[in-house]
Image (cartoon, rainbow, N blue to C red):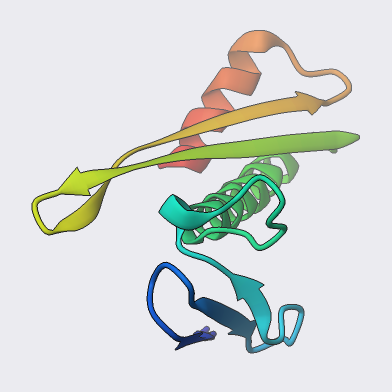
Length: 122
């Protein structure tokens, strides 16, 4: 499977704004801004937020698949991905990504839950 996402940026980093689109058109010319210049009033996500959401979504789907393979059907799974980006010389680097998952899964015990989380992470 091959999918794409695309982006366009207009203007300088501080005053400018970008837009992001996905092949499915779930996002189409959706605005985003540089993280260091986002104001509290801005509703445009940052690249870090978009990356975190995509990572959490991928992990959650993998986790649900692994649950089903072990004959568990979750009522709800919530995934969160904290992405940390720091200044690195002239640019920026992702220094860490921390995934958190909480779920309501009938009939599962803690050890089985942790085992399946580990498999999904791998």
